[in-house]
Image (cartoon, rainbow, N blue to C red; front, side, top):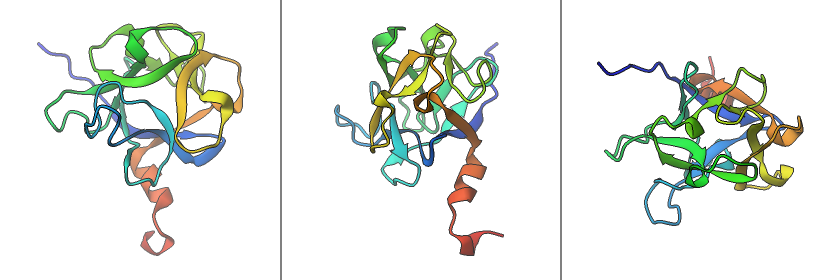
Length: 168
């Protein structure tokens, strides 16, 4: 019997600038809309060419691109490039396999996204930059702004960015 996972749809806001989130751009280098090895980047939540919603499994720690299996290609998970769990390794989308390198925790260190394959590593905005489309990688925990993320439920994230005229 297949295990049913309970996902929570959310975005991961960059705490230093809540208009920025973990995202993946369409039309990556291999020409697909969004596919394997697409880089995870710091993107603007409202960019129409970026997928910024994720399905998070709080029990097992998988972060899967929302709707990534809708084209029949299978689910895509946040993972270390080439599955190499090491500091300064870029994070990319890889086919979801349940590998340890695809497991993350938002509760071990509240405010940070910690690798469960190596709990000394967290998701980090490369060079602590506020520029658009910045690389996101795994880096040793140091508590800087570059490593601080706020998980926000999808409906809340969308509501916060809705025009005031549409809010109840």
